[in-house]
Length: 436
Figure 1 (cartoon, rainbow, N blue to C red):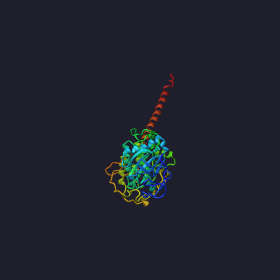
Figure 2 (tube, one colour):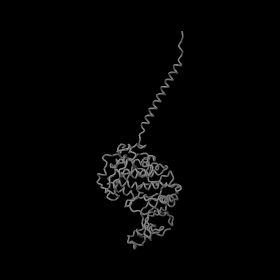
Figure 3 (spheres, rainbow, N blue to C red):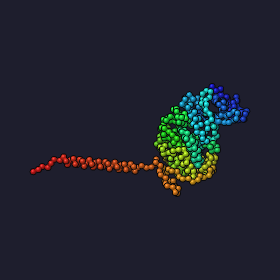
Figure 4 (cartoon, helix red, strand yellow):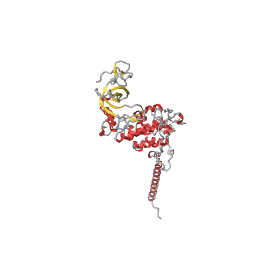
């Protein structure tokens, strides 16, 4: 068992003291431990100094190396969850997944072990900044150029994971971290789906289990069906929709209504919620949210390339580091389910001014597929053939008309043939005429 918790601890170095005051080593203000037995204790090579966050399955602390002063994040599984082998395996699957990927846009893991009392933990890099969800809550719709850059970095990280056969399955703004310098990191591979040869062999990631965050679940994931890398691309599309419009595509009152909407409903047109969204970006966004995974982008790189094409249609004022001069947008217009589209507010008219951070992108071709809401809204560049409609948006009414006409002709012919047969049979059975 761990020793009794100290009364006061230094959040910077993790040293413990019997009373309030200041740390004798670095001068930091001491904080009360709050009865937390982990604060001030050595875990591996690091001393636990500060609680950073707490969730349903565990907690994340800051750890400090006593000798060299390096800082890390230490993620502990809760004592209750540590009693369930499946949850422990899922917890360690995160470390295995991240170690297999090793990408700049995915948080790195340096160690995994258990405390003397049996609590599993993972040692990860400590990140400065905030999750993408914090910026969405603060600003609503984000600057479109910056949002596209963030999503492109996310897709780079997903592409590296998918190349290793790893599906995140819980991609959401809370799990995308942005540093003050603009670096993007994907977090929390705790329910990632691994191949059997990578250790993914338990109930923690089996098909049919409803794991993830419902607001960002793909239709196949919401139904408990088999999921692959395209499920992550759908979640990225939901994030793009939320970041661009300031609201999620499917507002719902209950979990059932939400999952049903993911499976059956089309999202509202993003340009109705934010008019300055260019048709090219709207097309890309709606293509990512197709219900059938075969009609979505088939790889993270395809999705990234489509977003990159849209940068040419965004002004330089839409590229600004988050947190630097970003003005909050007015609340998004209600969704299609709620109606009321009269005079939606324009972000350009809201008084928000952006300072350009990137040069304007070079002119690139339009995306392949048009918006199902406005197929003719996109201008076709000179020298390019008009794009074909996406298979999911084509109309097949003419097919049913042809089938109906054919069936009607068959029925009419059948009745005519049967009538002729009856008349012929009646004439054959009439009595012969009398002879004198």
